[in-house]
Image 1 (tube, one colour):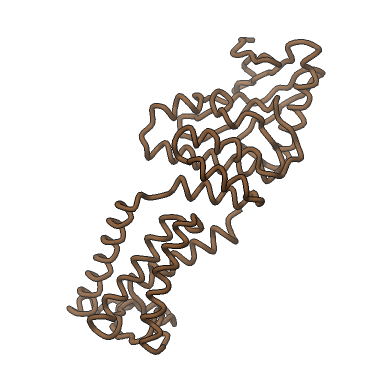
Image 2 (image 1 turned 90 degrees about the vertical axis):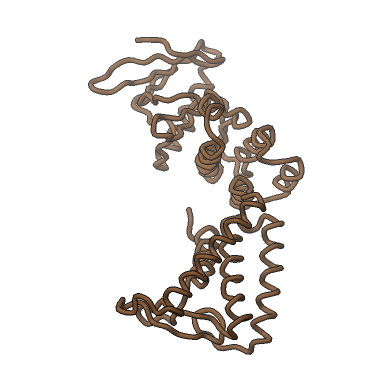
Amino acid sequence: MEKIGQGRRGEVYIYEKGNKKIAKKIALDQTKKASILKEIDIIKKLNNNGIKFVPQIESIGENYFEYQYIEGESFDKIFDKSTNFKKKKLIKSLLQKIYILDKLGVIHGEMIRPFSNILVDKKNNINIIDFERGTIGDFTGKNMRSFSQWLKNQKYLDIDDLKKIGKLKSIKEIYLYIKRKIEYIPICYSIIFIFLLVILDLFTKYIFYDLGYFQFLPFIKQAFNEGISWGISVNYSIVYFLTFFSTIFFIFLLKKNWISSFIFVLLFAGTIGNLIDRLYLGGVRDFISILDFPIFNFADMYLSFAILYILYEEFIKK
């Protein structure tokens, strides 16, 4: 056996067993035995729930347990040498796993310092180890609340965010709040993305509707819609009111962090794309015809994808 690490409560060895590496964690002495047994109970609970990003126990002894050895580099080292884009990706991946622990009522105990107890492998998969300070049965979102302290130190959250997180009661609310903050797109970039999406919408309308290109394709069919999305007829004064109201409402939702920047960009781009048509043409140019759906355009697609993503995030995603 080769010793690879030692903490306050146990020491870890590795050895070869067949064609795989096995890690063995042993209590330092009799006074630390209870901590190791508690860690075994926590990991067994996670294993029984099919959680793959924690040690997978192979065998258990009086003061030790063996598990499949997890290779990887500590989270903090990978994080420090990563680009900003990769840092956000790592944070979101770890946040999702912490969220799962909170839903199962398993508190890790060291999420305020995600260092040597978080391993990142060569494929950027994240594994969480060392549950010796953990507890079972706390459904208050303590892991994510602790992790938010670290995120504040990394300047992804601020004091006001921590206060808001402290007032949230649901584990899912905490998860979505932090996730949206991590995904936040600075307003200057949001404007650029909105501009590009609107240009794409107007360009496709010009190509497929105005110029009439690609009419031989079965899903291209021109239609002029004087109503709202999906061909729904409605009075134009109501259309303008709904457009103005929805724009203000989207901004309000973004400011409150109730929707992600991604959703905001899609909603705003879809609204602006069709509003331009209504202001200059008195209706909207549609050209995509699929099955029995009303004929639609790219702006309608932006709006639909945004709504579907909200439904997925709120009601479907586990």
